[in-house]
Length: 267
Image (cartoon, rainbow, N blue to C red):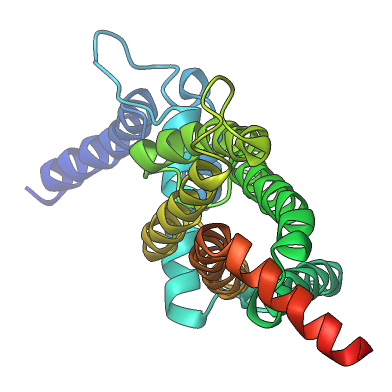
């Protein structure tokens, strides 16, 4: 009996090696990665290498676009948690926006202080054309943000909206600049339509910028500067249109009063 049991145990031990080999081959054919394989290797390796032994099985492998969207979403989620490094204004941008604010402040000061229709009429076209150029410039910033792919790729609608906002802002800027010399064929309207086109443009851009910033589609520093300069420009334009229409209505009276004052000073 003992010899018979030994014979049975020996045959069972002989069966262990083929069974272990068969299990290993089955695991390899099923596509199981070796124990030492890292996660990044599983992610980066092409499907035909990882699943070379599998046949008749539908595989769902992430595409490059899906990987980009996943990475972008993760990156911007971390920016929301740890803070956006784009909160700090670049030195060159700070100088540019500061210079823009100074020039607009000069136009605002002239609108406040002058009571001469001649001075106002001389400065007004430069003011309107300058602000029209700013609208066109800021429209170009939207195109630049799209080229830089700033913002989460998952916001496809807002990428399209930002792309469309660029040409629209440039067109409005050119329109405001062209209307600064008056409406062709309608001389009675004067340059006043240009004021309202520009005021509406800056107001619409400010609302659009806030919406973009909420979705991380606009750098915080750019929002800060654009809103600040936009407020200054809108205040200057509103004062200009009100002051200009007042001077236009009372031009004759103001000119005669100034002439009488000059005569009294000469005497």
